[in-house]
Length: 216
Image (tube, rainbow, N blue to C red; front, top):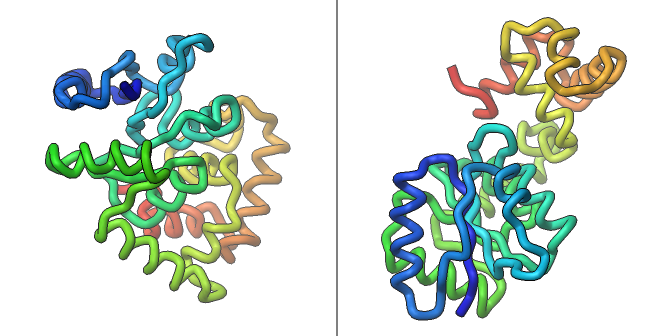
């Protein structure tokens, strides 16, 4: 049987999916975790899962960072992103961080089973909706100057700063939150100014809102 781990900060939803997966003949849930840090604490090097169903938006350690950690430390573990978000940016970013498939949480039991089987037996899973979004993103990414093109050149830390500048924190407070120096924050900010073609913090906030990185 394939061993599956569920990482999601909503216990009721997570438990329901766990019960569903345990009803499939070829799959069993190894354990459940509330977030990426909880997952890392529970991982047993002698009993690794074959597959991780990974939510994106979680406290302490989100799906992007967790997927990247899995890719770096246990690349043999396959990842399916399981999220309410189905925007192009979230999909592409999860794929870059190692996800083999992307399933939205309102999917039906039949599609979830197909996703699990395809990832384990074929190596990847994408439905038509996700394929269309990826194709659209790739198409627009080719256009120099487009939002997707500019975001493709932004690093993980710069994305984190871009989200943080949308708060009411000072740059000094952002530096403390990100556990980096104020000088490093200045460096990331200046890099974002250049990459996103903006000249101020307001410009960064407007870009983040326009691309859906943050919502009002």
